[in-house]
Image 1 (cartoon, rainbow, N blue to C red):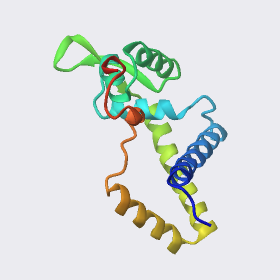
Image 2: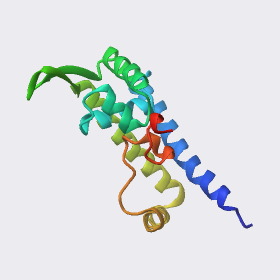
Image 3: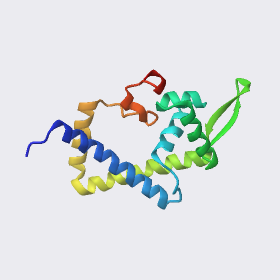
Image 4: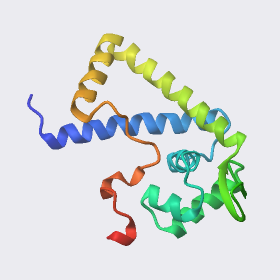
Length: 160
């Protein structure tokens, strides 16, 4: 049976969705019932240097207001804190808390477990072949976790 290019795109997206949904459900089982993939994207962006709402919005391809709402949610849950900037006492910086780092580490371990489940389902050799083929097609650098707005091709909402 021949499949279309659209079918391939949907299968790849479906694979991502299955992994993301499974990880979210497992995080809930492990004590983080209110954690969502967007929170992971935001915390990774903050850990990588997005230390204010404007920069977080740029990195996530969302408005500053949307980024500020995400920050407020992450602060409320104890995943992110605002601290002093060591270079400018007048400025405040976002920082991922120890609890936030714990959630990120737990999520990474869950994805390792999910990969192992896929290897068990289709065989380690087949999974490695799939990974190798995907690297050949999309490159060896994995997609950054702080760029959920990749569909917008790097433009910000203000850019249109």
